[in-house]
Length: 213
Image 1 (tube, rainbow, N blue to C red):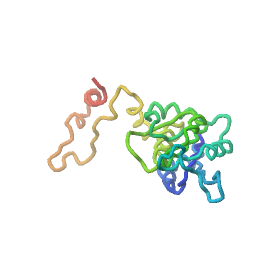
Image 2 (image 1 turned 90 degrees about the vertical axis):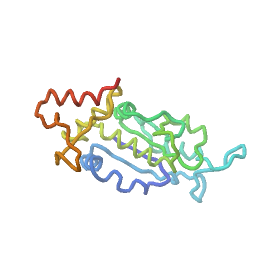
Image 3 (image 1 turned 120 degrees about the vertical axis):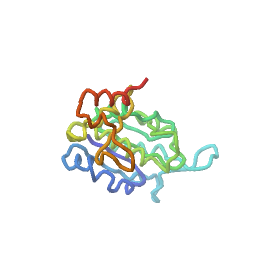
Image 4 (image 1 turned 60 degrees about the vertical axis):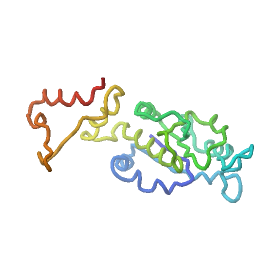
């Protein structure tokens, strides 16, 4: 899959996708991540991409002509375009699974006070990662890219893939408690059932934590 991220601060992504699971996926050619400096499509010679809002409100808005020019240059026939937005749909694991079926995701990182409303007509969906304020859309873009990438075929190894399942079922809690050596530390002991060697009892114990209701 190819990701194209339109941002004012491509340097914020330095190193984020060059290590661990995503870094290995890039090396294998399973994932391609491109960063596009929004100022490339600036509306004046000073590199401006924003302007004052009509109506006299404070702050600055990203201009629609800037984003339109960027998308016309980047998008292809199979591109799915996402705008990171505080008013967008809350991002879930189900959304990650859905987006993992796409061939190319274009993610537009929000900044300043927001976007010209007409930009909404240029995208396929608006996504929010939570009800809190961030300095911009770069961190949401990282979250979306990471969560989608790890669902792509071949990205996770055998030891890593099993840990995804608990996040994939909305009817289950995220995960059951896990322990490793030593068996006792500062008076805290590993549950006896986990050291019993009885797979059936262990599964029953784990099930208590992963089933809701």
